[in-house]
Each structure stands twice: as structure tokens, then as C-alpha cells.
Image 1 (cartoon, one colour):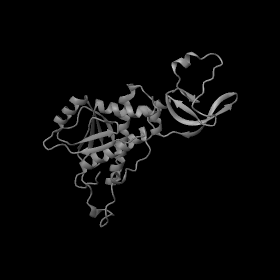
Image 2 (tube, rainbow, N blue to C red):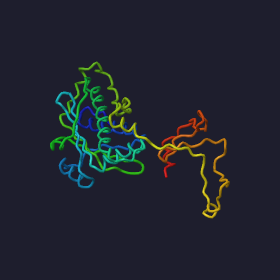
Image 3 (cartoon, rainbow, N blue to C red):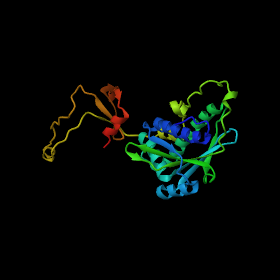
Image 4 (tube, one colour):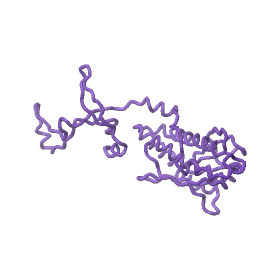
Length: 285
């Protein structure tokens, strides 16, 4: 990303792109590769929107306004297939398979990233820039727009659109206390400094979802003929020794290892280690 002082509109698009990646990583544990590019020469917003919507589903538009000189706004347009996949990854990371919450979850992702963009814009223009947003029918045809592509190692998502109007010019460097000094690198250039996402209604609801938790002492595969020979008193040898930790399984995914303990006459598990995201993915059926 760039700290381009000659094109604030491009800065808005590129800064939001970087912050979107950070928010997705914080919510789902994985950061997609994101690129923000200007449209091809001669491309129009109307034609590009129609093309993306025709291929990937109708665009969902959200407008976010900034209390800055010129009253700038940014519109984010996401085709259905894009916002559904982004929300699905966040919900999947929380162990939720119900896609009825996908739209609300995507809007939560979007609002968190735009909230961080407001704070970043406030730092750039040295003022309080907390903005507000709402769904919109479409973005203005005459506004400057950019295409945002997102790709995970296992899939590329349909493109998003970032449309900016009214972006203010930066104050002259001579009028700042930083005059004569090298401008500090923008947050997007050195990695956005964003605060942890604030609690939301969507994720407060997710925190109340009940998931099945089980403990595995081990497993083994047997030929059908051996299974048919089992009788009362038969012993099946598992693939885990008595001193190895057991697996804690949540929603068919191994999330931790621990040791079996007895608590007031009931079996329990003392957690020794939480598995990494990559290890969890490897244990999925």
C-alpha cells in the first residue's frame, strides 16, 4: 500500500483494503491476500458493477461517511458470492455452520474495517473522523473507484468494489509541525495499528451457541471380520498409550490435548495445550 499524498481517494481505497485483511485475520485466524487496483482505462463504474454483479450475484452496497472537509464517502460493493464466502469463513472459524447469519456477519466485518478506516483517516488529517454508514442502493457513477481482489490459499473470491467521492486534499506539509521532516510512513505501509475489534451483537450471539464437546482416548481401524467377532469382554487396543494426552473434540474438530482427571466423582479433562489453527484444519473430517 502507499501513502500517496497526491491522490487521497486512492489512499482511502488502499487503506481500507489493508484494514479489511487485518479484521478478517482477527476474526477468522487467516488473512487473505488482498490487492487494490485501479480499473482498466475506459472502464466505468456502471459497466464494472454490472459485469461483477452478473457473474457473482447482485452487489450489496454500503456507504460510509467521514466528517472531514468535503464530506467524503466511501461505498463498498460486494457481490453476493463474495460477502457470503467472507462471512462463511468467519462463521466457520467460530464453529457455526448456519448460513442464515452470513449477511449480518459480513456487515459486521465491513463496519469494523470502516471504523478502523475512520480512525486512520483521523490520524492522516489530524482530526476526529469517526464516521457513520448505512446500506445504499448504489454508488455515484461519477466517483472514483477501485477493484479489490481477495484470495485465500484454497480459493479466490469474487472482486469487491471501493468507490470514493469527496476525498479532501492533505494540509500543506509547510503548515504542519512536521514541516522539513520526512513524513512518517502511513499505517498501511508499516502494518495497520488497529485496536481489537469491539464486541458486536452478531458475535455476542455466536458466543451463546452451544457446541458438542467430547473426549477421545484413541482410535483404531479393524477389519469387518474382527468387528463381527466382538463379544462382551472383548478388548480393543487403541492407538494411544496410557501416558499420552487425550484429545478434546469440539464440533468434530480437535481443539486441545489434556489429561483425564476426576472431579467430585465425575471424569474431567485438564487442558495442557490448545492446538493451532493449522492443526485444527488437519483434523477436520
